[in-house]
Image (tube, rainbow, N blue to C red; front, side):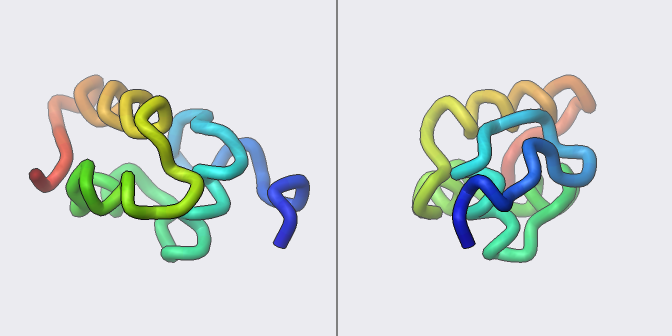
Length: 70
């Protein structure tokens, strides 16, 4: 699937870019609850998810008083 075919936003996730969205979709991840169950290392191991996407996801989780599994 081309990243052009990936939506800009998925579920309740913040906008993190299409490559990162594509990686999360491929892993079946569509919500912040699912992201919170992962560690930073798990996310960074996904092709397309980089440090910037992880920072954006961390900020979204922190806004809910939550964090990553690590």
